[in-house]
Image (cartoon, rainbow, N blue to C red; front, side, top):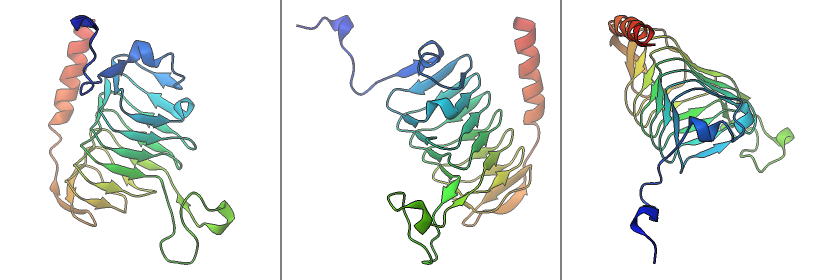
Length: 203
């Protein structure tokens, strides 16, 4: 008979934390990092993670080739997929809501080449290009970001959007394809400054 305190709830698998993660082979792990135990993460040696980062359940990060650099104060919501063949950068204070998909490589859909990774490379025409999210960029649930996109500091993307081209900073974007709706407030920069000051005073 199993004692109550030894019972593991199968519905609450919990998180690996920085102390565990440092032993797993990541290229870099900062402080206060939490990664859900039911995530799928491939290519740990190509993954850098800063401090104060949380990655929720059922996230897939595929960095078998390429790399991903995750900054500080970043949340990646459940169900996200990040393909890192062309490289992916998530800058400080950026975030992905649930079920966001980021592709830094993509097959050619025109019919002029074969598709999918089971086919020899010389029969493919894969676009491989870095994806960059600047500071304070937030991506709404269910959105898709395609290879080569750069979203500059301070912009937000609404739910269920398709980002196929780079976006300028400090805008609110939505739609498929994503278009600018209005300017985004930069009040959060003062809050960031206050947070940094509080951390310094409390250290």
